[in-house]
Image (tube, rainbow, N blue to C red; front, side, top):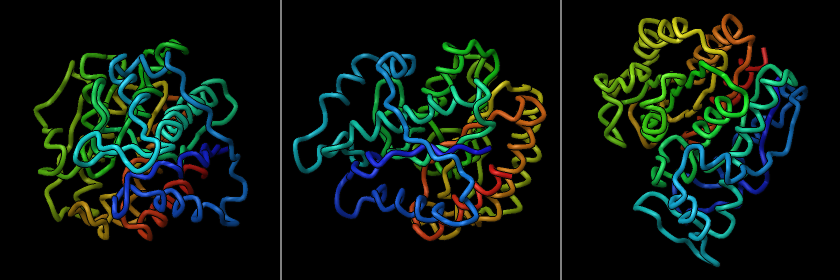
Length: 306
């Protein structure tokens, strides 16, 4: 069974008029999943992450900035790309909390896999900085919870967002119990994720040149990233599911389609079955063309549900 975690609070975070990371993104995903083919999804309201869960990843100073940073009206800029509005804190707590609850559910055997349809996204948030539309690092909070609360020794994070998950890499660069693998366009924001960045031997970055297409994406995963994942034999697979490498996305220059997201999801599901008892949790990251995002997320969730 596949469980879907989301919360209406995630629609209340509004970085401002014309901002790419708008509430319409999550609406597009949820509307795409409100279809007969997804009628069997087990839909659960996301809880809030606790301070204890967040502090496994973020500094106390970062938490205080985010908890105190929400404006009474309008928006408050955290950097040139990232802002808070009324409702942003609750949205961010629910987004991180969804990922924690999903980890609990799959590790306790309630479900095999879960998808967290939440925002704001997370993979750019570093221990002490909100950036790249991200307030808390949702997938990192989930991985840290799997280590601390469940005692896992090998947690893998696969990130196929078109932008490098610099925050996730920063959190775990010295943590050998977590393997972080990323495919992303390079050069591109945030100007990190180069192939010579290895952390404690647990960081694997695969760079794709602007204009790279389905063939190059699949060759990178089949040739470099998936073999490293198999060798690690993860007990849990986490996925930063960004859909902004789609050919129609306005923020990057790769040329993937929804079928490529179905393909990589299928590969990750099979890997989780082989090594992790099928346990896999995916969370929404980027994707900024609404039609492409809806189609890609649908393909991803359909592959997770198979």
